[in-house]
Image (cartoon, rainbow, N blue to C red; front, side):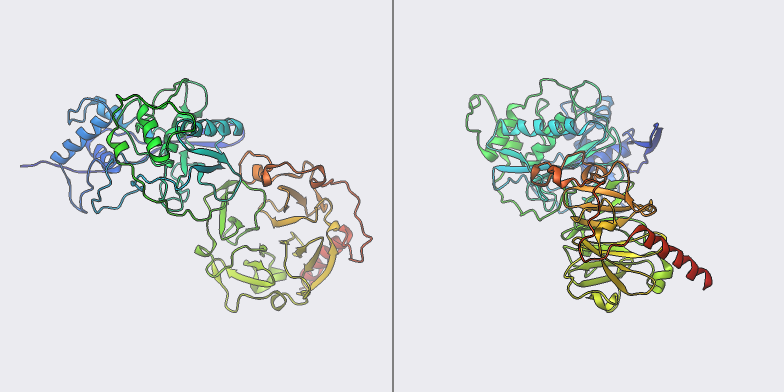
Amino acid sequence: MLRKLYIVCSSCHYVYILSAFSILTVVEGTPVTNAGEAAEHLIKYEYLEEPDPGANTDISAFVEALKKYQATGNIPQTGELDDPTLTLMNTPRCGLSDKTDTSSSGRSKRYSLHSTKWDRKHLTWNILRYTVKVTPSQLDDAIETALKYWSDVSGLTFERKYIEDPDIIVLFAEPYDDHGDGIVFQGKGQVLAHAFYPGSGIWSGDAHFDNSETWTVGVTTGTNIVSVATHEFGHSIGLAHSNLFNSIMWPWNKAYNAHLELDQDDINGAQELYGAPTIWYPPTDSYQPTERTKKLTEAPTVTKPFIPSNCQVEFDTITVGADGGTYIFKGRYYWQMIDRKVYIPKLIDSTWPHLAANLDAAVTVKNSYIWKDRVAKTYFFKGRQVYRYTLYNLDMGFPRDISTEFGGFPYDVAKLDAVVEGIGNGQTYFFTGDRFYIYDYSEQISGPFSIGSFKGIPPSIVAGVQWTDNYLYFFSSYGWYYQFSPWNFNVNYGYPRLTVQDWFGCGLGIQAGETQPTAAAIPNNNLAIDNSSPRKTIHFLTLFISFLLFIIINYTN
């Protein structure tokens, strides 16, 4: 009579560390300690078939799966859950499956396991989200080094491009955080990273790393970024896992090696896909390819759709929604920002149905005296069309022309650059070029006024928002942003600052065209306001009187 093995689930432990500036969360993954957890582990990496719902795992199948696992890990094939096996199961590793054949079992997989190749040899890359464990320049160098291991031995070349859809996107994600691909890291000491093969959909070639690990470069402590990234980029170009211990594609992490080299198996796999480099000394005749190398195919790559990078200078618009979340829009996508962390972009119409792409401006209005039954509505602007949403639902009768919703809006304004609601007086400012209009308690548009009234703000703004700290933030087309005080109506000291660094955590300089802005692109906050134009200029005194009027009216009512 066959014994049955019951599979149980386990939890994870959290350790909180208080630093001088913030609370850092270190999430420790749960180790494999028993047969039930071992069975889960074997199922995860496709050594063992997942049983039908309500069924248990057969012990004989479990034993055979253990032997295969032990063979891949180069430990004695005992078929028992012995100490070497438990040690291997608790060794940090790559998150991709170890299955090396392409036959279908009819069961859905977590990853694309078809070793496809890119249809070109020149690939682009960029970093979407940095880690704070090393400096930005250290991470840049580490990623370049890891990619160079593959370009040195194959026909591939890699180029960093600050574009919105590079072939390989690198990001560091928090544990237990859905960073967009549906695959969640389980904490420190578990899965270090995962990557996607060419042709596996919108994530093709991308590599994601668990930010809870102690990432390091050039030292014996922690987890070495170069080694792990080199492994993951092997997947990015189409290589699967190898059972050769010396191969960089062996699934488990190894001790730091200052003289890291690719194994001959890695080299031959890359060359079978992309050929040899221009100058290359062929391998010796004694080399015998592994099953992993033999199974590589010439399957075409699925076209990777456009996905914007947050490490860019300019986006379309930004707003703080009625739910309190900060949303940043670019093209057909948006990012949600929580605690100054920007998450993987999602399609706009997946959250706001029927909303157009390539928006011009957005604002969520809060002042109940001004907006009455429209308070907490979110407005999106594209050209002269305005969309109004209650949370994520488009209100009836929208979109409509902007003058229909905002009485007196001039017909000669074709598009807006930003819409920002002020604090206190509830006035909402509509910016276009070097002028702006005001919508207030009269429920009519007035203006135009010179943007010089917002002292220190340039006429090149592309977005603006009243953020959760009640300051107004303006974003320029040059990659700088300005913190503006609604109390003294001036840019605060220390601004402008880099948008990609403070809002997106990229740690990069200006990336538009990969050049730094000229001195003329960085406005001087002390410039005198030019009121020589026929446009009206609204002064701080005017705003103050307007605010007092608002208080008086509100009090008398």
